[in-house]
Length: 160
Image (cartoon, rainbow, N blue to C red; front, top):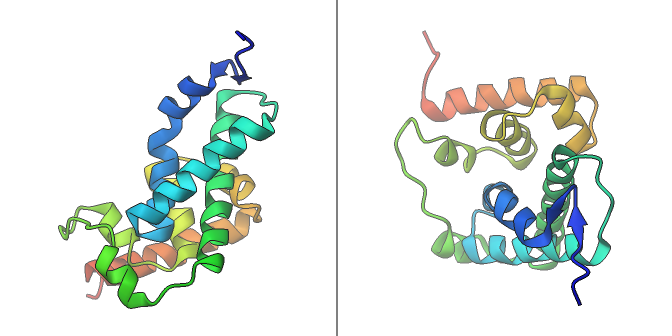
């Protein structure tokens, strides 16, 4: 039984190791709860294993994993609506320092959070974010601009 599945030239284990932080980051930013993020992480990689799609490159694989992780989180939130008090108790603790991007992103609405996370944390370009989020480039530019305005408000800056 040595028929190892390959994903853009990586074994399943290599793909998990290489993209675990990315998928975890997407799930935590979306759900703001580690236990729920772990469930969506598992579901994302389960889909990779069982669907075994063909990928043109490792970048294609990474983008696919991000799209699936976002969808998993959206589905998870729909199916598991819980009171905000329960989320507050189990919320992922973020460092409250002004320089901590995760702290600020956790306080932005999800459409902006996704675009900002992909742009600043994953270093995707606008065109790539548009493909991943299945949105027009101008929509992504608007999300980033409005998201930056929200971040400015969160950080309490730019009100001269």
